[in-house]
Image (tube, rainbow, N blue to C red; front, side, top):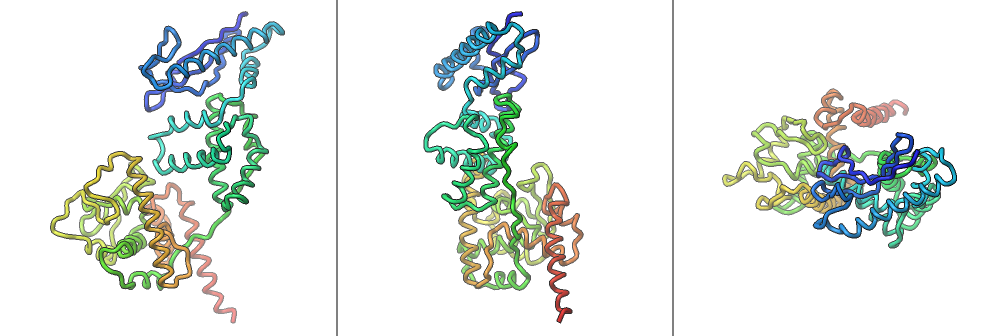
Length: 404
């Protein structure tokens, strides 16, 4: 039975932006097999009758040439294979086509980023894009095919990150985790076969890192620090202490906190990690005092409480908002480093350590772990248990006084 090779427009795989991927479909003995071409086309630009991309789409001519070449290559390979054996299966034909020209990993990354944009948090998207750009720098302008992306390559790239870039173990792990995620998506899309996954024989493990947090004495030092109102250090200190008293709010949630979210006693908001799940936090007097020092008669409900974002700027673009918050996060952490040095705290603190500080304080004061988990927005109590372990270790050390 003759083999059919066609270009198909897979509407069943249309993404949220209305883009549809193109596939080669191979049918032999009524058994179809599909090979992703790594091309996404908005529905309005596809000419189904002629199996071409319409004019008007960027790079349409180049992409049409690529489609035609892929189809011609596949047809020629099928013709050669069937000359050798009439009984060859569609799976075997697919394997030969995929092996004939290893797809580009970087080209697939473009498709991956187009597909996940808007589906994942902007900061997560930017982090993944940064990892791939870093990999491109390592390749120094050369393409990277899935065939090149083997176990040996991963080991060499790991060596480069550790010994040439000075990356720590968990940075290497985070980079490899993102590359592995994209490889797994390529397998799901039938771009490569599962046995071509280089991570089957490559492992990189996450190392446990002690979570930095402040003691009650250290918090008091920061609270009592004499700072000029309105200065960057003054605002950063207040935001940090508010988080340490108010459920360990993340820097993104602090930056976006508006007067409309505060009723004089509690704050009500949707946190960054728990979209769609509201969190209501009753504030202790110290946290209320911090917020009140920013109050004035002319404030509007949609004004930001802290002056990290501009009230007159349109932040409706999620990507733009994420970039602005990331920029503020860098500035805030630099300021916190200076505060820690001035107070001789001898700890590397970032804004995220206020979150660890709140959790350990809450557990020490007797708050039930499930309440701590709820207020922190953890999806699983297992995430919160690491703080319980820290507190228990502190108690064990305290009991050592009886060893003397």
